[in-house]
Image (cartoon, rainbow, N blue to C red; front, side):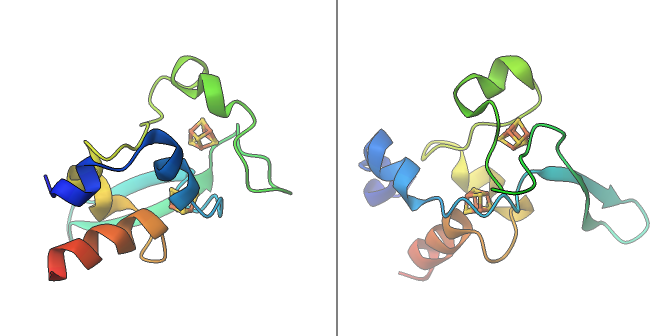
Length: 96
Ligand code: SF4
Ligand code: SF4
């Protein structure tokens, strides 16, 4: 992993997220084309604020909700929306 990403504190990591809620939807890979498609929003997403209604307990309330971290972002950036701040960060570091 990139040293700069590894060195980000938990607080800095949380601040990177722009709270757009665009990652909080179901994802499907179309078998024929291997393309990723986004479906309905997660039922725990507040549609007005785009914020998770159970953010601090999301791994319990929604066990298949993946908590993104500096440790796992390299493996997961591919399914995040192109405009996601974490995905942009990974792409930025990959370009260096
Ligand atoms: S549980 Fe919360 S963070 Fe996880 S996908 Fe649903 S709304 Fe998003
Ligand atoms: S798409 Fe990225 S920036 Fe937007 S809420 Fe999800 S993790 Fe945060």
